[in-house]
Structures are given as structure tokens and as C-alpha cells.
Length: 208
Image 1 (cartoon, rainbow, N blue to C red):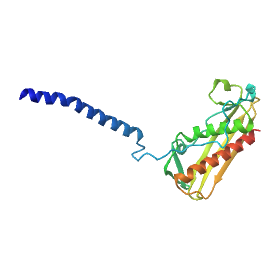
Image 2: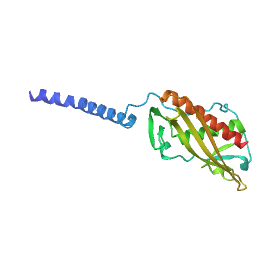
Image 3: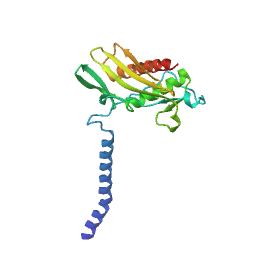
Image 4: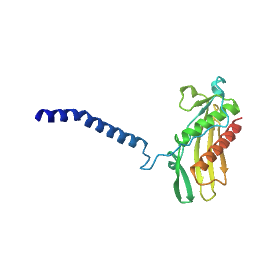
């Protein structure tokens, strides 16, 4: 009897360890996809340029003519992966199920860079790239990038500052508003993409 009991105990140990390992794996996976205790979104929002350079396209420029594009500064409400909703002058919330694949500042800088490349045919470098020294420097503030419930509209507002190699500083505010937008992720995401592309085209026109 002791022999039989010993055989059952020893053979069940790997099964127990396997079950424990599966349980820990499931718990770890749940921790990775859990967003603040809520169910993960069905899809993620991103920004897509209306035009982009084809593979193999090449441009060149003297260092002083290249543009160093820095990631825009954003307020705390935009330094997250959620879409802010302006309820009134003193209240903010976040739109349900609307989650960005990257922070808005990163997405907008990438969209702006591609638009400038295509529209003004400039060489655009990341602001932190060592090769960007001596180039035109563009910095900015993305102060609005969300939904305004009082207007049923999305608003994108970007304040650009351009410093050229001669030390001359230029500043300009750019804005795009898409009205008549429903307060849901399926409507707000495309509207923000459209407004962001509009602002990017305005900035590219300003540089020409």
C-alpha cells in the first residue's frame, strides 16, 4: 500500500507544478493587458498622414536647410494614451474605449514630419539627432488634442516656434476644428486624424 501511495504522489507532482505555472502565466498576461482594471479596448487609435513618400524616394539638403523637428510639449491631460473630453471650462474626462497606440505628442510629431517632407520637400530630422545641429529648429506646444463636449467637436491646436541659423525666431498658432462629431471612439478617432492632418498641412505651408 505504501508503495502504491508513493507512486501516486510522485506522479502527481509534475501535474501540480504545471497547473501552478499555467496559473501564474495567466495572471501575468492579465496584468499586461489590464488597463486600469477595465477591459482592454477592441482597437487602438493612431494618426495616418494623407500622403506619404513611396519607398525609394530620396531628398537632400544642406545642413542649414534641414529641419530639426522636436517632439511637442503637451499639458498633463495629453501626456497619456487617452483622449481628453472638455466638459466645461473647469472639468475634464476621458473618452470611453478611446486609447492611443502611442502618446499623442509622438504620433503628431511623426505625422508632421511626414507631411513636411512631402509638401515642402525638406529633409526632416528628429530634434535629438546629432546631425540636426546647425539646422532649422522647430519646437512647439500641442495644447489641444481632444474632444470638446460643449461644441460636439474635436480640436487640434499647435503653437510652433521656428529658430533659423541666423537666430531669427518665428512663432505661429495653427488650429483645426471638426464639428458635428459624436462622442464615441469610432467617431472621434477619425475626426482627430483629419484635424491633425489639416494642422500639419498648415505648418508645411508656413515653412514654404
